[in-house]
Length: 140
Image (cartoon, rainbow, N blue to C red; front, side, top):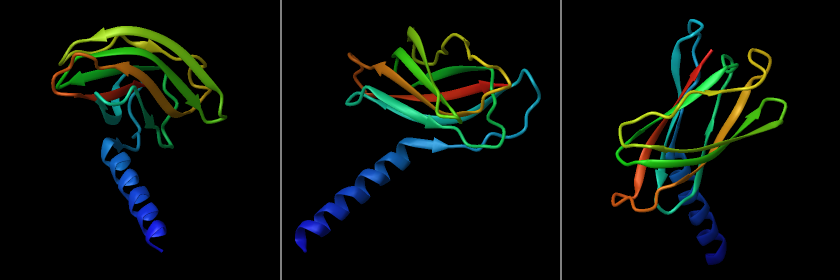
């Protein structure tokens, strides 16, 4: 009984931390060529990757970019998973300064593929505060 309760409480704590880490947003209809926020998360010193779930219905984007606040971040790579489950591995290897933005990352299959998820791998070594807030923008 105690082991089951402990397992349940541990699982509940992990789920709570995951929900707090990512703010899921539902994309809204927006004019072509405009940037919109599709998610926000915290890149922590203790982790090396994170992900953003992209919700329907307006999730067929042609480009993404990242804005970083509170600490600098080295973006190593990202994987875009489309609605059909096909992954797109994109090597990024870029340093994003505190308060800065990444370069614009063009996606394949513009207008034909809906995005389900964006996972990204990063390095926060040497960051005294231990976390960077990352906002993901996407363009139609």
